[in-house]
Amino acid sequence: MRMKFNKSGQLLLVSAASLLVAGLLTACTTNTVDFVYVTSSLAAGTNSYGEINVLEVNRESGFMRQIPTSPFPSGGRDPVGDAVSTDFQNLYVVNEDDNNIVQFTIGSDGKLYPQNTVNTPGIYPIAVTVSGSNLFVLDTYQPLPTCSNAAPCSGSVAVFPIGAASGSTVSGTLGAPVTNGDKSYWPLDLSGSASTDVIKPTAMATLPSGSNLYVAAYDTNANRGYVFGFAVGSGGTLSAVNNGLALPAGSMPSAIASDSTGSYVYVTDSNHNQVLGYAVQSGALAPLTSGTKGGNGFPTGSSPSAIAADPAGGFLYVANSLDATVSSYSINAGALTRNGTFSTGLQPVAIGFDASLHRYLYTVNFLGSSLSGFQVDQTDGSLINTQNSPYTSNALPTAMVAIPHGTAAAQ
Image 1: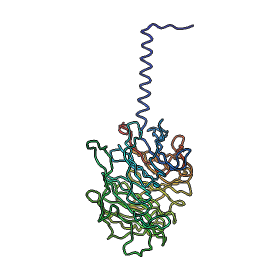
Image 2: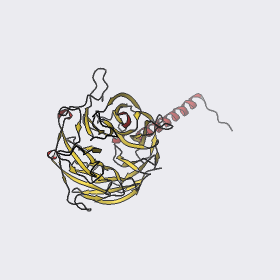
Image 3: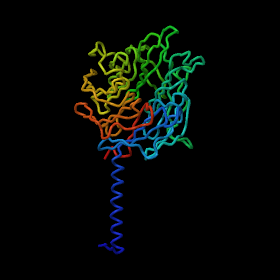
Image 4: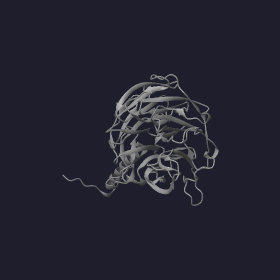
């Protein structure tokens, strides 16, 4: 039997269906709690230009999926790092082989719109971070005419001011590099060292307050690692702390992070399979004495490559590239106690949290061309795989950063 409807009945059904669709769309919108931006050094089907995968995070499960228009071109070759402005309106991507930083504005739907490209002062940028109105970039070599892979020199760090909107200028546009002394960068040289010392930077981090910047690096000739500390002054100028001396940091520091309170700084040493702890004392660093590996060292898995502190406080996480694992630690007066170790995809090289809830942790797996997702137990720091983890990315992903999606975090 075929049921018949009059026009008013049809209108009621259409209205009901429309309400249902609207409800579903609203649920989808509010369930997207974050957007995550993942740089990949090899775009699909190419051997040069990189791409940026944009994934949305489900607030209930941590499940990640690419937005329909993802991926986006990175604006250069071999993107190795990304950062967002503090208002979450701009994404900055460093492309190592093109010595540039590309600014993208971020749409409300997570889409990226390229705006401006600036060159870094040095050669081969490897990392970028944002704190307040400053963007910091780390270059493998200083901008000396004789520097190259064949004739290496020490690296450098530079500071770019992030501008507000003015006239036709887009908010988030990078200004000229801040002058430190007579240079547009700070050279990472050892005080009083011989000219043969070549200091290669590997990573950097700022305190949550933005008052200090720390750079991890190693001496390519002497197999020694260091941490350089800087106070960040008005306008982004840098001044060295610790009496201008770099502190020892194992032999091959690979990553660096501050805890959520800004009381401690941690550096991974990939050669000695340890994480080194330092207390922050008015911006200067003092090695901890409570390390279970002696001195300020705490054991990790094999070849630790990335580190992140729980923004909610209390826990630290280290990705171990050769083990394909992530280790969880509790922080107690700076000392680390390992809570457990959890499997990731192949060769994790970056690690980060969702920006809204701080409930989900993700690792970027370089050789696995994937992201591994975990839900964080905020009572003991343990990790549980999120739904359908791992998640596919483009080939050879290198870094990630997350932003909150609208007001979803407050709901």
